[in-house]
Length: 115
Length: 391
Ligand SMILES: Cc1ncc(COP(=O)(O)O)c(C=O)c1O
Image (tube, rainbow over all chains, first blue to last red):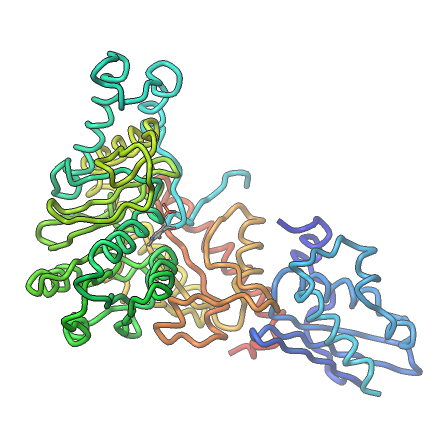
């Protein structure tokens, strides 16, 4: 079964959905048809608003929620540094689930790089 | 809600308390090894119970007791049937016919046999999972020694036309094996009218204990044993008998003979109600496999558009509802169901497949709770899904 924090975010994900007028969109899709999309509203290099969608496992959904919570109000150069190590502060990253964590993380970073 | 609503009965079933009661004395009171029945009265007692179990299974299958051999379960029975026939009768030919939706116990055994030079031919199944007996007929050649077709599929519940296939094989003097792990104890079986030579069954799929099963081998049919040892079970399966397991299996078989009809009708009623309510309350849900009335009455296998099954199963579990569907990980390269793939379900949909299988201990009163939970979870996962356009 999953770590508690994963279940909490999975059962009550934050910032779910799309933004009306995003300045940036980041997507990532896997061979097995799992997909993540992040919508950013970035002004003056600061994330003013963020929403996301994921069709994937509970890890992918929870990580999307954790990332979106963290990103609000942060500067994009800080956010661009986020990696697996950062997420390990929240929960132990099981090797089996690395791909599931990569899915939202890649989508998130893809969105930030399109400026 | 603290009750667990277990809706994954095709995976395994809870052991019936009456079965456990029957087994218990044979752990530490009547613990003897039935092999020494001629010299020990304790062994004789155990032997009698083991033979009663054999008789109960024989009755359930319309077989003779000396055609039943105990194994460690469905997997071993499948292995024994396929490898046992292939290695014993390779001088007659090297072709084996099967279907792509068999359980892994069959598919992997066939793969192994392929490595030994056997040629495996797969007959197609249609979009509902049915094999056409005519196609089996077409695939048969002079070199065919064995046909193995499952009685009912474990994922979609499709019941194959076993009697017709059996007839075709018998007329041509080709061995016929059926994996009946999903049907024994659930629907009537008669090895004689089915014309089968070998049949696999497993106790834990019909309220018996795990790790025990049996294989029916028709009188006169020779198989090469792959467990060498003390020669128990007439040499077909060496090893001290799993007496407690076997006695449990026998009791499960006896209960099934008596209660099957009622159980199946209750299970079907609950399955039908569940499907009815799901269809009425949740949009864009489709049935995988055969029509609801021509599949096992415990089985529901559905595609829920726009979502993946793993988060669905985890969220259901959080609400105390345990269902099946395989865990198709978000990004991992995990193989989607070979059964759904074979019947032509698209990859995207396979990842959203949910299998609900009802058992005799499920209560029909829980249907509303299950459907309501499913509905709420599906709604929130669809809100989350980039594939869902609010269709
Ligand atoms: C159709 C089928 N065959 C074989 C098996 C394997 O049986 P067992 O778990 O007893 O080894 C199963 C169950 O997993 C099954 O559903």
